[in-house]
Length: 292
Image (cartoon, rainbow, N blue to C red; front, side, top):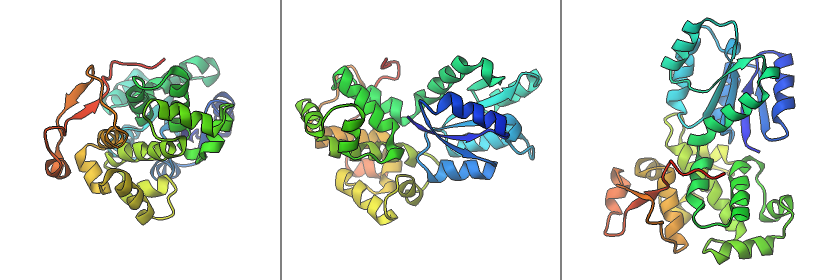
């Protein structure tokens, strides 16, 4: 149910993508490159699907895409290209860091599109958090946590999420508390902070823009929530490791220990130096772990 920004470039392709993707994803369709950038900056989109033909040709589509990757390196980006495009175009896209390509016609590429979207999302915050949660949560609760991360744009309450999965809020909260997690309502707030930590790592974002993405009433409200749960400002989160810093605070606030199988990461940045100590190690899940 992730929110995807879509720049199709023509109505038939837009309708076909909607038919293929909307059962599994929410789509924010745009008509221009500028519109795509606005969605990526201002909405909680975790991925984008772009028809290469719809990208401005000046200075070149490859340079424009490389700029997008520089500003938003965590965005799960999938490029649709015509089969007739020459091999040199593929070379230039690869040189620009574009790794996830799907050859049109889309009608013939439904499964390829789904697989490419999954691969493009593997470096995103949802995949990171789900891997991080996997040692703690039973399979069913892990799927619910995955749904909560994927659906941050829906702004579900605890009751709405529980209803979506056919359970009650008190029951789900009890299941989360049983493994040392906060109640479901507080966990949903943490999912917003996980996303915020990941987005704050990107050069193209600021604390104000991330607050708007997550639909806080103001930048001050976002900073208060971040300060309350982590003790850090947006700048300190950016300098201290982004989502890894948020994850560390999640563990500490709930009295959880990182599994020994995880690797240790040294802190960096001014915030980290002020908060260093014998137990200040940073942990993140081994990227080779996958949750099926």
